[in-house]
Image 1 (tube, rainbow, N blue to C red):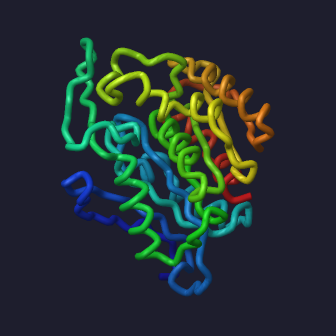
Image 2: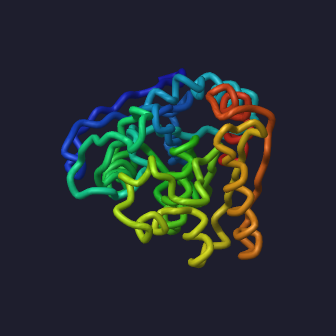
Length: 264
């Protein structure tokens, strides 16, 4: 394989008891390279899926940056996590309607276990990856950014870098999110701010936070609170407020900055 490509993997998740999909970006020369490559797991928002890799033109941007020498070759993995927030919310997978009149469908199930116990081992088994935290990174957008943060904080032995890009960090439990959390203790179990406040965060973990200055969800406020906690704990972290709204255009406009962070 002389050119880069995106490989689609469909597999049956035993934990969720349903078929799931993953898109994997493999850089130019992957087949000829005998050295294991670092892996970036990049998680989509609540209305997205594994096709975020195409929606954000990640292949084209990564190709250009690798070709120009701005970043070194890496594997990018975009797994489907549905509208789950990446949490273990129910022992049985199901779809429920969000409270209120939004009409949004929420996916409940053991999504943390699905990602940690099935997706990551599957990728390490199929591809020539660096199988330690020093070569395994996680990031995401909106609800995927929230999931990336709690996964990295709760599984610090697995990830060396994390990025929360316009991450859906809430300062209080919102009514529309109650199906994910049976009570406040479960919400706090996954809330990145609470985790960082009440637990030791490894100083080896590098953190990148950002949100748009016109983010309708005001998620830059949650980023600021989290950043303050991480700074006090002397964790290497950075927080940025860039120009833009809470949308795909914002992410695309900053994707080069993200890839430089993960690849630095």
